[in-house]
Length: 185
Image (cartoon, rainbow, N blue to C red; front, side, top):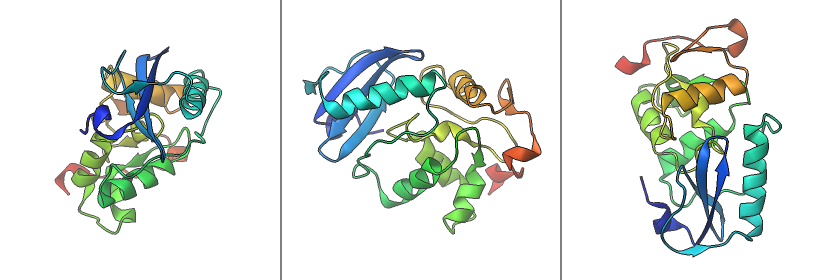
């Protein structure tokens, strides 16, 4: 994963219900979210308007008061495939999930579920780009790079009203989840 210092000009950090989070911005928008207390580089700008707004929205989301972020994002640090995957991920509504295979099919690459998983695993702006809403075709939660890993992924999904039992969804028809064995794709 690209270090926040490689693409961000200004950053700030704040304590959240998930612990310390650092956000980095460029002139084009929010470019990074890292689960860290501080980032030892660049310019710390606690008064940057976009960073202030991003932390306000992040806190509101984590308190269950916000369902969709309204922030400009800087997509320039991503390759074409990852950008397309993460733009589809951004479209997953609050409280819903999609599978890696569903996203691959929507991209027109039905055998690319693993590549979709890799793009999600290297998401530079987790939480804001809700990669926690992407699950395996078998209903299992797979990987989460944020502090706490799968425990945090399950916590975020539960907070959004998605039924999760340990590391697997409790399947309900309204989730629209189509199970399949994608790992072999």
